[in-house]
Image (cartoon, rainbow, N blue to C red):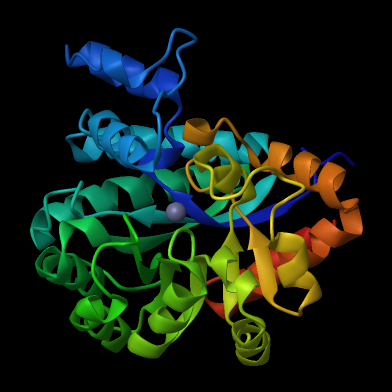
Length: 328
Ligand SMILES: [Zn+2]
């Protein structure tokens, strides 16, 4: 078995952020939308820093305007996941981009994506579940209709709620209404923190948003031994995205990445790609780079995949099936 073919679980993936450049170019061409500034000469996504990345992300996403576009995107994302051995993934979906926070419109987008995901499951061998995310830099007011969209569609497929976007805007507690609404609807919770905001943002997030089970990134926790112990003791899982951190300059290189230190401190970590084509990465590349950096072998990655499967927001039957899939 190779790193590419070994079965994997990926919990931190932004749906639009996983859109292959050729897919976005194709849709832009069909709709005659000019997005030439989004790509470099090699046809890859081009940006200078995190702010610019968010800008490019929104321009690329702006070509996706209909449920049918999201259905096609879902197929493209699933094919990419299958190509890299992913058997289960959770994808971040933003009602802000899918109907502007309107519940009825959001239901149409969601139905289109779920239909494709269910059709593709047998064919490609990838099980997909959705997590609704509000966008932090859009502000607390915008997070409320997004949470209502999530609450109205909570179920076997839409299993979680979280927050993405620029981490340094406001405090986690500003978004408590949205997280409370989602939690009361039975959704499981994750939140981006500690990518840019350091250990304090991770602890503030846990303190201010009750019921958070996973943290997106969370790598800033490495500077605070007491926080690492808290994470280890409570079993909060970090959705670590090393290639994303290297691409955006959160860390200098894979070998300088804190994931090994966090893991050795007993913190539960798993591996994801975040927005893979934006960061020129894949799950296979993540494994190869981490193996080179830390000497991790197949057994290490299998253990990390088990952490991810245990932390998945799916029902228990699905979890049992994924855990079995990781044994092969
Ligand atoms: Zn992310």
